[in-house]
Length: 540
Image (cartoon, rainbow, N blue to C red; front, side, top):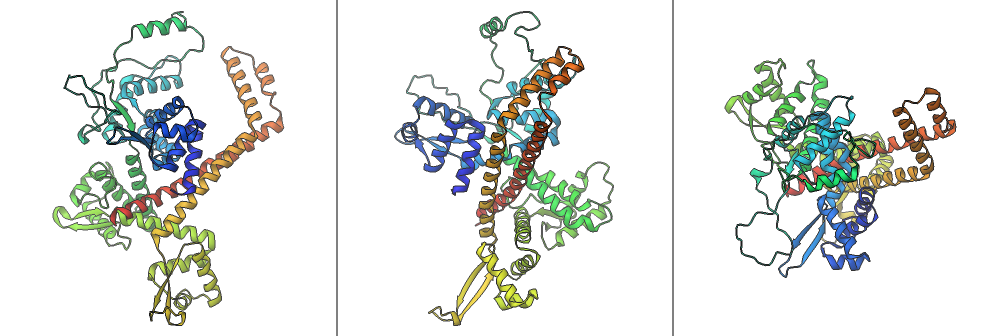
């Protein structure tokens, strides 16, 4: 665990959950698994506060616990899961793209709350959608339930492990911590609920339409509490499934950029690849190096409706993809018109390599990028060979090689002719270790994201007074509009913020938007590098 990762985890925990949770979380990340009382002692936090912080972290899957032989429960932080909080906006946007506003709000609620029952999610989302609708229109629970079921069918949401019901009625000592289990067949099984109703609007007054005070109404609701139909069945967002979708999108985009720009019928190669990935998304595990083999006939039948290409043209495109040097697609057999697989590991390797090339070009210039690609292609080269192949003068080539060597983009390998390693009798070969370079770049990306978050927090803190004033003015205008105030009165309230202040607010908004966009872009690079490193480590 590097210092850059720990610092980023600290910033994310503080931003999402506050100082106490951040203190406990970072302590566990630094020290590893620890029991409750040791955490309280080492952090100087009261036992009650530590318990509450651990509850929050466990609820959001950021901490796991395990019982040791002596009955001691130890808690361990999941640093990789903390870093996933960077990607929350991307998960939510993906759900919106695939399943419209309803899917977006379902995933948002699950990410914000960690774990929720289906009935609670459906009611909350229906209420939120009803709030945004015109007066007189409401969102039906059944419509939200259908979207939830579609998300479960495509594995974007999954059940949480639960405590199994024990048939033995004999009283005995309870275990120090519950043991949670889940079978794979139940992971995406949606309970049969008959949720009948519509979303409700929140009322700003202290009484609802019946004229009953809130305190009295809440007392009645607790007295007449109905049993929850799916009590104990909790759901969470399946982040691995989202990552699989991001990976597939990156591969499709890479093929579109490489092949479709040279064809008259645009997007054909990428559409074929998208169809193959869509057919494999449920059957292929997210960490698998290859997709399941698919026949040409199956692919042809699964192409989108209205996509008018003949079987012969499809076979030509599949042959073109299989013959491409990048080897994204491979042919595994001849049955069914030809069996094809997508080599996910090679695809991730190509994407990581392209990212490294892009960084070298932006940082050191096009001539350095030429040398980097040359060393990458030839595997091992001496300095004289680099000069000759790249057609760059010796002095400049040496300078560029040393720049990339000091930046850890390329490495130097010594091959001695004699056991004494004398420099005059040793070959010095430049090579590119993609895995090592990817790790180095990933570390820099973590530092960049931490700097972006700190800058955004600084900008917000510096303009805190102005932001609070703007929020107060907006709240006054909203309440006056609700009561039917005149335009002149609203104009007078708006003038409370002067022209220089308004300009300052615009500048702040523009800067914060830039920083947010930069965070998302850096996270896209982090995702590609992490996926490549994880895929490579599993193959070793």
